[in-house]
Image (cartoon, rainbow over all chains, first blue to last red; front, side, top):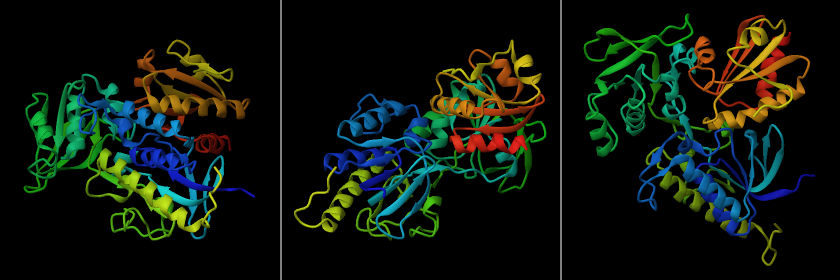
Length: 317
Length: 110
């Protein structure tokens, strides 16, 4: 019989790792299952300038390495691998990875969100062959080439600025006529001579699936309907994220966009299951708000466990 | 980065080691600066050990062999290509786990 853990955390971004620090320091000896994209979205960015505590900014991977080391320092048990299925229909909850199974009294979900795609068949066919969702990962392959970015928020602008240092030219394609995102990012992007903008424009198709590589884009102006073609070797899709909630489909309440619904802090529709970070946040989606909610989830989980463990009995680590 | 069951593939030996190989060849395109590539590397080693004799496994460092990456339109790493008689029959872009990688090879063996 597999013994039950007190608390298990799924996800290793700022939310999951903060939850790990707090539950470890509470003596709960948490298990944290990293997932394939260990470290979360900050692993895909360069300088993080808005996470408080770092006046000169800090590189995303470095920040995550610090958080991970901190979580381990207090006794978090970090497991490599990713969760293939979860059962929260009864307690203790069951979690399966391809290598192991865990039973847990409390579960903290911190699975985050993944880049949303346009949804074009050509897009899927050309992922890794010119279509990318990560500038820092794949920019290397586009040195000196013409590339396009779809999107109008901070992610798109960050990618544009990063890629402008590598590419020969960057075209930002946005379906509106004004950028979203923070003022500082907008100013930097609009002032960059290597970046140009196509407003009120959408991507209808991507050439060239038969050749197996991106050679250009087919565009449409949403007001005039005019179609055009843009030559280029790369398309970076930066149109937002979608929460990683497929594992919990049918088991936890989610909203219309797939985000886990949380109430009273981080409680979900199942008692003993808590959610933090981007998986339950469509509004703020910042590293610091994710970390903050990870702390809340840890405190919520600890209080939950204290109520279900008989008084005077401390669950052994 | 390279275990006993895994060969170092370069532009110089690509033709002989991959294209002229009669059986299946799994080629992992990676670079030292690529985090997910480093995570995939031991998984590729494990698959090579487990499927020894049924598939040849090699790794290509794209920093040292950019033309090889370019020749197969590899524009994101890690990318794993499965070759059968000199042709690419499967493409896996990004980090995957051992089960997924083994399944892809198994599907091609039939």
